[in-house]
Length: 562
Image (tube, rainbow, N blue to C red; front, side):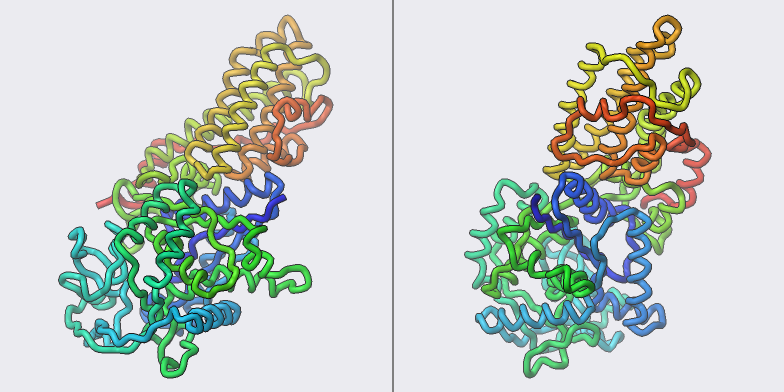
């Protein structure tokens, strides 16, 4: 048994998660965590809301609420959405807690003691109309490198170039839209990344070629361009006050304390049952823990460069990321999701339209792993109707209804498998091996394609075996075929469980069967798990088709991309 630490990028507290957020870090991390548990590993799966920064202050201001109350409300909203999406977090916490404050202060003190913190007087953008210094992400303008006209003051999401707000062309306040901005001097603290560049580069080379291109190339791009000192404080009220003399009126920058939140949230989890749990087992025991992170490509620089450098600079033995799975973007009909413009379906609405497993299957089948992907209602309906209803659902209903009508509601007994079944077992074993391999390597699109191919093997088998014809002349042989098919349903359920937990459980409940491990999965053994005589229920259809009328209704309801 191995210890697997799984972390997912922490969602901003004020944003309503849309399908891109779900597939860009949250769903993949959940499927990997579920899979690793089914492989017999000890898994700790941690996430939480990212709550500090101007984002929260502005969101609370617009909502007419105190910032803490605003964060409390939205934390609950996020937690409910992720529960509805069947995300199996061991703990879903928040970055604004005392535990994270303790961790942030400790890590900062170590960096300061070791000479990696610098004081600088810098020029920062002040909005006269908003009467405040603007956080980098609340300054919008044109990127000087690629010309993207909606670049933020901290980073251009188009070319991923890290920016200073003063570099933007035609800058404006994202809060009010005002261009009445001026640059004022203010004193801040910086993490001296150049001092850590050599160590960081050597550490990163240990990840080659194991990280996927989306993550590794972005990290190498940063190093090639040369690291710069990174400001870690801000002139804000909401956040952890800086624990250094002369800086008590400032707070730590959200991108400093947010990644530390993984550790702080783990401590929250451990503090709930201190006699049973120890956060240090996971974060200060690197030789015994494999740490896997999931995130969209815009978050990659902070987790492949800034946060690893932060931990290296403490000179303490922290668990670093072993594998960083980066994702590109999911667009809506080729454009951006936008709640305010009624364009795109967001997670809390999606779950009201269709059961969760429809979404989990489609999103992971189309995960934007190597490049951006686009959600369209036509593609979604096609996957539901063809894959889920037509391949998996049809097989389950067909087999159980036929068996019930021909021989009764018990798994048929007697008879040995023939060469046809032995060939099926051999073909399935190869596909199962590949499916497990792809999930282990976090190649989700390949894994889902293999899962569908496994379902197709079952459909091909029953079409060739033709139990409805065989039963007319050889009832014993027909029962063998039907028993094989019922065992296939159980196998399909077990293999589908990391992706579609509710559907998998429904399939198993119809058979009165339990879940099995995926470790050393032996198809031949599993094809003989139900030997005969066990009762089963036919049940309702697993999936409903998406009708043309429903499809048009959804397109109208959720808008089109612009």
